[in-house]
Image (cartoon, rainbow, N blue to C red; front, top):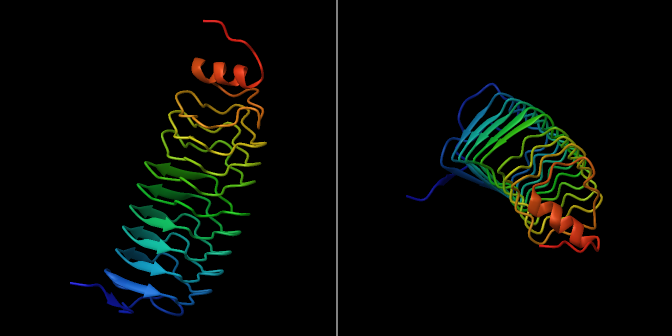
Length: 218
């Protein structure tokens, strides 16, 4: 049975009420909506705008946000389980204290967003743009960050062990104190950043040395 559209449920929120499960909203302008403490289950949003929306402590379960704009949205303390944010914009969004569990954020952009502290477990951050974002001390162990743009990001003290960093852009990324041991780094340009103070495994240390012209003997 196909999902219905624009079915609303009662709630204390200002503006449009949060949609019921298994509904689809497309092209909706939800700027400044007040959905603090709301719960969303299996809802799909396509090309919707959430500019300056109030969604603190929001809980989403298996929802989809596709090509949505969340500029300036307040999502602090929100929790997302199995939710996909595909090619979304989080410009200046407030995301401190957010928990992402089994989420997919592929292709999304976070310019000027506040992302720490945050919890991310078994989530896919491939192809995201995190340019210049402060991720210091964040635990991203085992996360997928393939082809992510981490240019100028602050990852000092971050845990990137066992992460998928294949072809990630690390130009001028701050990695002092970060743990990269066991991370997949195929296609990473080791000349584009300074790993001083980062924890590397033996294979990574050899790749770094070779990238800087050292001859590593067997």
